[in-house]
Each structure stands twice: as structure tokens, then as C-alpha cells.
Image (cartoon, rainbow, N blue to C red; front, side, top):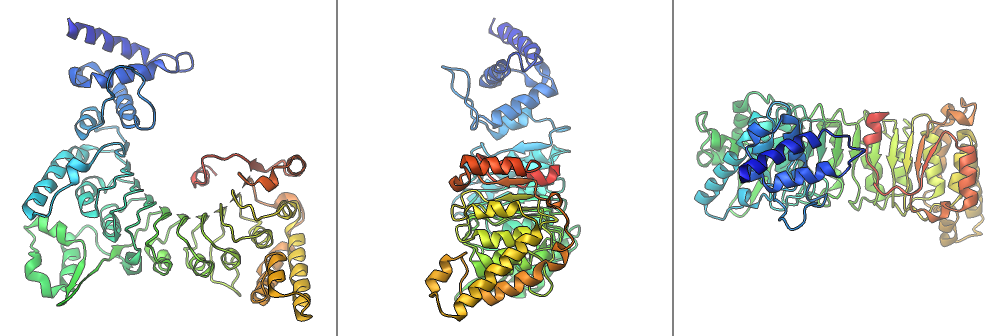
Amino acid sequence: MSNRNSLSLNISCDKLLNLNQKKIPNLETYCLDYVLSKLDLFNIEQQYTNDIKEKLLQRMLSLYQNKFTIKNIPQPQPTIQRVEQLINFETTSHLDLSSINMNKYILGNNNNNNNNNFNNNLINSFSFLSKCKKLTNLTMSGQSTITSDKLLPILEMVGHSLQRLDLSKCPRLNDTIIHYISFYCPNLEYLNLEDCIGISGAVFQRASTYDIKNKNNIIKLTNNNNSSNSNSNNISPNNSQNNLNNLTATTTTTTTTTTTTIFMNKMLNLIELNLSGCKSINPKNLYCLKTAFPSLKMFSFAKNFLSDEDGSVLVQTLPSSLISLDLSFNPIGRLTLLSLVPNSKTNWTSFQLKSLSLGYCRCINAFDLSAVLAGLYKSLEYLSIPGCFQIDKSFLDQILLSPSTILSNIASATTSLSNINSNNSLDNNSNNLLNGISNQSLPTTNSIITTTTTTNLNKRKSVDVVALKTLDISYCSQFLSSSTLTKLNQNCKQMKILRYNTIGFNHNHIYSS
């Protein structure tokens, strides 16, 4: 009787799932939750179509985001076995395993034999991924216990087809994961390593081109630099498991310490990289990004305590293909901002930004931001400055002016401050309060402003030529007065003003532009 009731419910669910979502918005979710709660009792293969199985899979993996709708029934916990039961090997392209507790698959102890058993368990549990022919998007975010070595078998199974990989909030990952990804994911276009605090970035300095198809060449390269430990490494063409383990690095052993040097293959197809919150990264390790990622278009390096000096050098060493940059939540200032404007006489910046995020950067001011706006007036389409309370209303006034007028105002302000300083009429503290300009930076600011965009700005004929389409001023109370908003709406009809953006900044608008 119970089987017949279950079958009748399945048929009903099949029909109900095809109803118009606008008429019955929550019924589908309710039916999916009920089937998931009884998943062990149903014959999924025979009773459900591939479309329904796909919906069941996505619902199960999103239960930690959306509440379970059925009361008095325990919420089903997503497991690898249930994922394998619901996944469609022919069509599934996106897979988010963030909600799965990976501890029982990846945790071992100090005993080598036990570690090998756990490795075998991991490989066996995820072996079904190798059957996914169209898997291009894999997310394993928030796995606090997963390590680079534990991810290796998974990358070996599906890395060749991946285009997007999200490993954010995995604190135990280190530079070795970048080494693995660079060899096993040659087609990767998006890599998210946000809040992976174990990554130092030193591997970026050792990027080169290797033959990823010939694993023996890679091992031989590693082994040549590690001749002292060749016997212990036990590298041989027939020992594939040891070869994978020894692919990680070149090791030099001394009497007191062991130093590991990790290299990476150039990632020619990567266009978006997120290293925000990777607080262990030394900014100097990022000066070779244009070598490691020559096609990089979108780069995020927020929440990393990036100083103004380091930010200036970093900006000038980024690839020429870059069009979107996120430096929010960093104490950067004038040096970094002025480096964003390409000028062969004052910096080595070689890209033209279309999108820029400076949210909660409390050391920038309206004066320097206006210089960036004037210098990038032809290309900058999206500017995000939420939480920048120190930027006064004068910046919005600058938006309504032509770039040539902005340039003239900046130059005259700089000249006035220079005259004041030469007459010693103000002390250093007063100068810092006036437009945020210090004595030491005045000559540099003056030279940059007068040479940055003079040639280009004089060609501009009307305000409508400015490329800026979206301005995010969320949580900036100084811009929210009725008079200011009315002025913006009247004079910037072609510009979208974001005042309450709760999602935050991302690079998605670049894909749609």
C-alpha cells in the first residue's frame, strides 16, 4: 500500500512540476522537498525524468540557502551518494558541492596507511564525476578541512572540462592548489580563491609553459631539481599514484629545514581571478600576474590591507587585457588611483578599465577620484564607491562637468596649494585637510595631472561623450539628500545611480556589456 501511495504521489508531482510557476510559486518546492525526504524509498531511475532529477539535485544542494518547507519531517542531508543518484552524466554542467560535509571523505590521521585508505575512499566516492561529460562549473566553497592534496583526485577527474572553479573560503588550501589547477584545468576561465588565507602567491613568480599532456616530462623536471631525494620519491612510469603525489613540488632537504618550491603552468585562458581576502599574499608576489595570466580581464584583490605604495606598483604590473578591477576594503590612496590612468611618462599602466570598485577605501578623496574619472572618461563605464564617507558632494559636481573642465579645476587647485606652500602660510596638517593633498605629493600630483590626459581631454566636445553608465554610491549618506539626488536625476539621465545595492560588487556586468 505504501508503495502504491508513493507511486501515485510521484505521478502527481510530475504533473504539478509542469504547472505555471506564476500561479503556484511554492508548490514545486514543496513537492521537491517531499520527494527528497523520501528519496531512499523511490526508484529515481524509473519514476522520474532527467528534468525532474535535475531539479531535485539543485534543490537538495541549495537547502542550506532556502528553508526546508515540510514540517515535522527531518531535513534531508545532501551526500555524495545522493548526488550520484540524481546527477545526469550527459547534461549536468553546474555542480555545487558546498553544502556537503566533506569531513568523512577527506579527514585522516598521521598514520600513512590510514591516509592511503582515506585517499582511496575519496577517489571511490567521487569517481562518478569522471562520467560527467559536460561538467564545466564546479563549486566547493566553505570546506574548512579540505586541502590541496585532497582536491587533486577530483581535479584529475574533471579538470580537463572545467571552465569555472570556485574554491572560496577553504582556509587550508595553499599554493599547491594553484600548481594542480594550472596543469589539470587548461580550459579554466574563472577561478575564485576568495578568503583562502593559506595561499601566499609565491607560485605566481614561477610561471612558465610546460607540456601538460606529457606528465613524465613534468615529473622529470621536478625530479632533476630534486636529485638528492630521488630514491625516496620513488618516481617511475608504472607508479602512477606516487607520480601524482610527487608532482606537487621540488623539494630541497637540508640538515635543519625543508624548503618546498612550487611552480605553475601559464593559464592562458583564465579571464577572471578572485584573490580577495587572501591575507597571506605578499603584494610583491603579484607583480608577475601578467606572466602567469596573460589573458586576465577581471581581477579582485579586496580585503587584503593593500598599502598605497604596493597598490600603485601592483596596478602598473597587471596585464594589458584587464578591464575590471576590484580593490575595495583596502587603505589605498592617491598613488594607486593615479596609477590607474595609463600614461607612458609617469607609469607603466597598459590597460583601460571599464569597471572599477573602490568601496570602503577610506583614504581616497574627491580630488583624486576626479582625476581618475577624467583620465578614464572614454572607457570607464562602472564605478563603485559605496561606504566612502570621506568623499564630499564636490565629486558629484565633477561628474556633471566635462573632463577638460575637471582637468582645469584639478590643475588650478594644485597650483594654488603650491603657492600657499611656498609662502609657508599653512602648515602640513592644514594642507592635508585641503583637498587631501600633502606637501610631499604636490609635485608628483601636478606632473601626473598635467600630462595624464591633456591630449585626449581636449578632443571632447560634450558631456554626453563620457562612458560612465553606472555609479554605485550605496551607503554614502552625504549623497542621499533630496537636492543632490534631484540634480543627479536631471543631469545624468543616461547614468544608472545605485543607492541601496545590497549585493555588493561583482564582475557580472562585464559579461553582459
